[in-house]
Structures are given as structure tokens and as C-alpha cells.
Length: 254
Image (cartoon, rainbow, N blue to C red; front, top):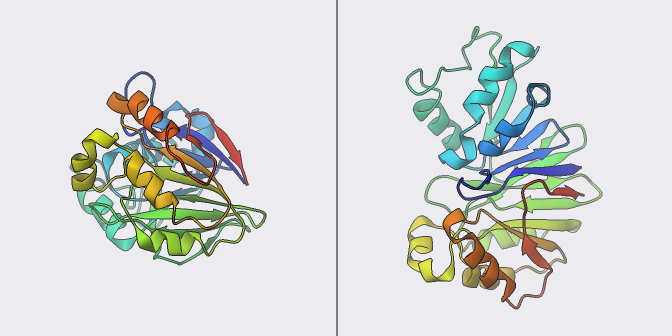
């Protein structure tokens, strides 16, 4: 499997894009503003969208994606997420007030988009590519995702704070190759990280001490206003695993 980072920022500005990870050209993990850089042809090839949670920086381009390519496709785009997450999208986004309900356009029988609930630990098989939700701890219902090609695995935590259940799931993955984990705030904004249930570098180091599998770790979701400070603080961490910053445009193979 190949993952292309369309966006991995915790905000916008200076050409930064919010979270959107394209896998093999037909799977999206979150649909932040990075999706908007794809061509219409590339957008039309996306069949599956896995949403970690309902916050705008992770779903901003989902309405535009469906609107742009729905009529070009012969089958609906399938949107996966916890039942609670899909309910939030249905009530607050695809509600005819903020955006049309594309599960009923052009008809209920042949819509441009369909919801597919998934629950923690439930595995989705997409032609031998396996994706399952893993625990996240955030201010709204949320998950991360474990992607498994058979040859290797990648875990994306989504937005989360200190989370013991995540490590139980991650440490059970024998072929783990990459861990993408959020680090949204610098250490001096610890109180804000706590209130919004995100991580900062000192908490990242503590969380990574719980990782028992060999893996390359990539920090993501840095807030643009503090990006360089977070990068500097992450660089000073003493951790047992290779650690670097996830970059827009980066490709990972597993």
C-alpha cells in the first residue's frame, strides 16, 4: 500500500493543508483541505473515505468531493466512521442547511454518497487491504485507523490525547511499520492541549514510551502558529523509536 500525505497540518496558512491521507489512489483517511489539490480525475477515483472524527479540519473537503465527482461515478462514495461520527455528519453537515444530503441525491436508490458504520476493532477488507478503527480519546467521538497490507502496517492515531487503549491495540500489531501520531500544541500550551484533548511534545514522549513494537514514528497535526517551536521541541525528545515530522507530499509504503 502507498500513502500520500495530501495534508497533515493542524490549520492553514503558508500553503499548509489540513489532514487528508490518500491511500492507493482510491482510499481517503480524513478529508481535510489537502483533498482540494487533487485533479477532478484523481478525485473521481476515490471510492472510500474513512473519517476519524467530525471536526472541520478533517471533513472540510468531503462535501466538495462528493459534489464535484458524484455525477461522474457509477457508484456512491462510501463514507466510513463510528456510528456517532456519521450521525454528526448527517445532522450538522449534510443536512440541506449547510450542504445538501448526498445520500438522497440524485435519488435515495442511487445516491452519490453512502454511510457505512464501523466500530472499534471491526475490520474492513478492501481487496486484501485491511482497515480497522483503533481507540482515540478526543473531545468528540473519534478513532484512529490501522491500515494493513499484509506485508506491513501503518497506524494513524487521528486526534487524541493520552490514551492507554491505543497502545494495547498498537502493540498487538506484529507487522507495524509506521505510526503517525498527533502533536498539536507546543509544551507551553499544555493547558490548551489538555482542554482540547490533544498532545504536546512532552506528552508525546511519554506516550511513545508505551510503544513496544519497532516502528518509525511521524508527528502530525502541528498548529501552524507554533509549528517551528513544536518541531524544535520534538527534535529534543529522547525516545527509543525513530521520530520525525510528517510532511505534506510525503509518500509511505507498507
